[in-house]
Length: 263
Image (cartoon, rainbow, N blue to C red):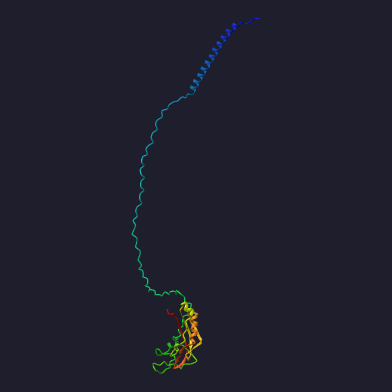
């Protein structure tokens, strides 16, 4: 067996290494060169051909000319208006003049409505319708006797007074006259309270000049106490009886009694 010398082996390794380095360097250079060529080719392929075109400037829009105004429509011929014929005037008859209306009286409603019966004055004479009929003398009576005579100052009667009949004041010649006697006493309760009042009483005075208490009536009284005082006093009062033809007769009397305080 032959052994390889160690020295010869070392020389071949150095030369091989050198060759290897050269080869690798060449390969690297080729690779770099190829890569650069490929980049230039790609740049050429990417470049575009640009061509410039000359563009004519756009012409300005034509200026609009003012259109002539439309021709005026011919006016219709004017028609002459004839003057209107005045209407015929018909004479107007004035309305008849009416007489002014007669005046009228406006009645006012009473403010307060009376609720009490008005007082009756028995002293007034009763109107006799027969006195206003037939023929006679002014102031005469329907019961006068034709051809009768008498004194002008005398008040003649149809007949003498009837003692059983009660007369009113206008029927007698001489009415009843008070002579005095008892007077109504002022009620103490009303005196202390300072109340005043009035009583209108009606009663009959007989031919003897006394009051017939059965005929006593209170026509009006401001307080019942005043009416009671009048009733008590009438029994003691005296009167001159009424007379007809010189005879005493009974007469209806209406007399007021006033109650006043001295202040």
